[in-house]
Amino acid sequence: MSENEFEQALTYTSYLAVDELLSLQRPLSDGPEHDELLFIVIHQTYELWFKQLLHEFAAAGKALEAGQTHYALSLLGRIRTILKVCVTQVDILETMTPLQFNAFRGYLASSSGFQSAQFRKMEAVLGRRDSKMAGHLPLDIQEEIAQICSQNSIWDSLLVYLNGRGHAMPSSVLERDKKDAYVSNSEVQDALLLVHRQDPESAMVCERFVDIDEGVQEWRYRHVKMVERTIGHKAGTGGSSGVGYLASTLFHPVFTDLWEIRSRF
Image 1: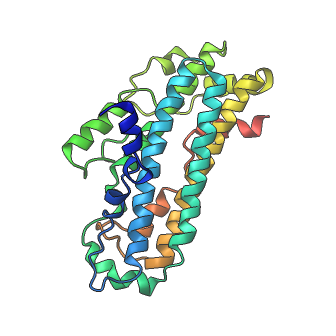
Image 2: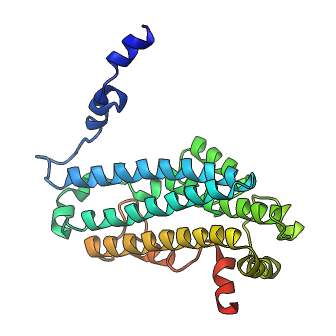
Image 3: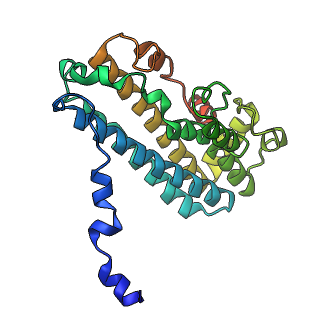
């Protein structure tokens, strides 16, 4: 097929694989229950956004390590905006009442949001290092997450960026085994204070990280309250403690050093 014939053959529907996309919503309930379609569409959309977030984080990490300030700022701003969209989608899901959800909840069997491999990958990109976080996922996914955990997190990429801008970071931090979780560091905090006082461009990058941290925490909070509003304190569909576990994840900043320095300005 020539390039001209290809261009003529390409349509909105074929380019976006719309027919295939719209065939992927497959309710299991009898009828099916009206609200099961909404439940599926929302969660499939989340998975698409997680895919995009992983794509953006990968590019942002490379941009930071290459010292590309303005490109990194653009990517980090996009990540924050996508997180806002993820939070807003909770509003749509909350239009479904507990009775409407329970009309099809039994069909979900053992499936659970805990099984979202992409969300676990995103946690690893953000810096989570926990051998148990992927233990319930298929082995190939566990291997992919282990690979992510062996590389720089997005926080590590920020430290490389700042070090390259002349804000010396401890070698013990930069050269540590990336399989080890980052631990708050007073020397890093001292350097971050100087960044904010002496390097406005780098300070803007740091504030983008605070924006993203807020976005992640906001999403977790809204998710917890949505689950509590819908199923109360019942166990989750995957056998988890449901709200109890989700609530335990709240108010734990991702980039702790950026929060620790707030009282020192």
